[in-house]
Amino acid sequence: MDKIIVDTSVLIKWFTDEPGSTDAQKILKQQQNSKIQIILPDIVLLELVNALYWAKKFTYEHILIVLEAMSKIKIIYKGLNNSLLPAASLLMIRYKIQSYDALFIALAEVEKCPLITVDRKHHRKEISKRIRYL
Image (cartoon, rainbow, N blue to C red; front, side):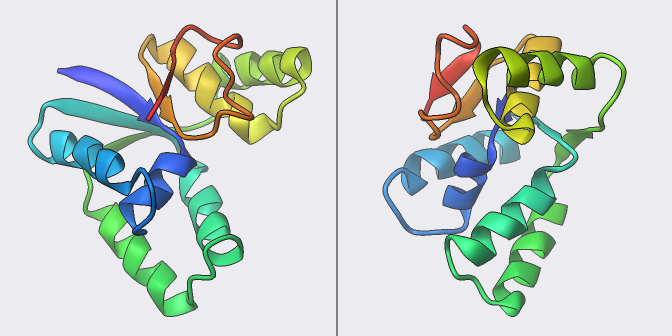
């Protein structure tokens, strides 16, 4: 089974109706049909609720619904460790990007799998050959 990383910009599209949501839903369907395995850094849920509240204006009740839905999706969550954190730190410094953006790229590098993103500003292809745009 192929494994992939999706960043928060893709997760948001699982729970909103906006351009790109249909393509993001296809990734979720592939996971639900056991065609792919999704791996995420464990901080992703914190970043997701932050984005849903501040950028998408979700209410507390809607955020709880999203968290419940996320708990039912078979995702492998990876914690910060001795290989991931140094790799993310190096990417952050080298490419002048936020640590949490660097973390997704580092995870893709460590896991040797693609990172699917909508975020072309912070996940530029010159940073990693593993970056793919939704």
